[in-house]
Length: 519
Image (cartoon, rainbow, N blue to C red; front, side, top):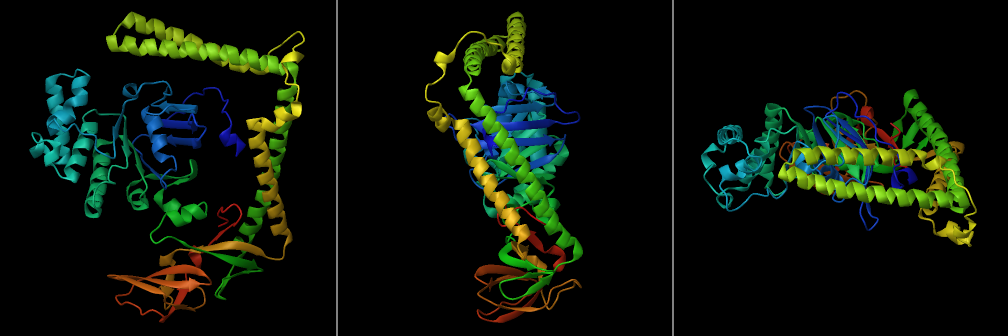
């Protein structure tokens, strides 16, 4: 959407109360114009364990690195412990990061690796020793303090990396897929160790992983991401039981939720195998409410974008505006360059600990920022005089066709119009073509223990996977592969018929166009 892709022009706001970390409309765009993170918003309270989860390339590690100060924020505001943190150096943010590859110094002992950051900050030797040995006791690596990393196992190296973060007593722990290099058994063990560590230390923790099992077992809240966009934020229970869309429903859970096309007609859902699922009054009303709300939402967005397009066309072709833009860009460029120069000087002054110079540079930077904000505030009301028609491009049509903003707006407008037409056709039609979802463990053999179940249906086994006390039974629902997780201690033969029922309490419906959950 255009509001996610265009420049975020908001002014800096005050950090919300009672929040340890606040992401406000964070966007990341690389120099090649590739946008990695779109309008990321999240408030994190103290002592929360937040997990960013999603497939590779979804923007979770980029978001973590922006928090750590290892990546610049293109647009948006970041607050750490109530302080505006966009321009803070990594060492000024009071965060400690644990990397995927451990990042240990091979020529140093475990003790020296853990003590290194404290020594660099000129801590007293006794304090360094106290912190290192205390962290080593917590992590059960006290016997390895004189050993070098090459002589440690993967789990022990990971503990050293965690210990190096613990000794700093940071406000926030950042962990970027710290368990991905470990084998499956060790990952399970380290998962519980990290949760215990979080509970004992009490620091706010943000953990990045692509493994939904880690997310579900460790997090107090989960942030599910895809293609740089947040799909859903919630507790593990909320994410699992009430997925916001098809992606979340299939990404979270092992095996994933079964999703298949269906038809809703009257008070029943018709599945491809002929099974009819009854709808109650609340479910029928939820379908009507979903499409009524979608029509209102899309109509409003279309009106908003049409206004943006009209305003943009006026901006591009009005002489006074062109002059104002040129003046604004010239002044903004000068202020940005000055802030960059002063910031570089400030970093050098901090390294040499010249206190008077530090204070003076901080004041100059603050004045420049205030001037920058004032310049932005006054931009729309800049008064111009004189005839500046000669700086307006002669070919207005070419200008309109090549403007990046208009291209994005027009693409979004076309998508919204198509969506609005689709929703109106759905409401006008005699039946709904939707997507039906149910999790594998919500199908029972012989009815299970629940009274609210569907009619019995026969499933012809295509694959059977016996996992001790339970069996994954694969079968076809029309042309789609379905999985039922059955609590049995026997395997099924291919082609064998198994009688199943669905738990009607956990039936889910999704809109096929937006893929959003209806209920």
